Length: 93
Image 1 (cartoon, rainbow, N blue to C red):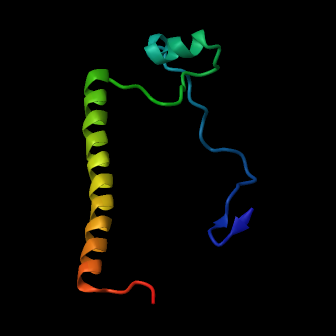
Image 2 (image 1 turned 45 degrees about the vertical axis):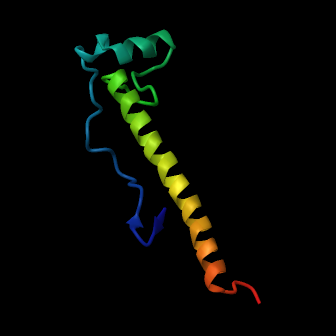
């Protein structure tokens, strides 16, 4: 397949060797959970939170910021609407 980026696939043999499994990672918690689920490799979507309490605290902090930003945007619409009504700005004629 080619496009404006040029040739996207190669017809020749791969030059890199396949990676061998790391024996130290075999007993990692991620690999153990993957084997329990019957997966071929230790890839489990979603990643791994090293400190769950810290991650939850960060989510709560960012959640409060999100609610505050939404409230400010909605309040700004009301304030601008009231100011427009007070000075007689006609939106639709």
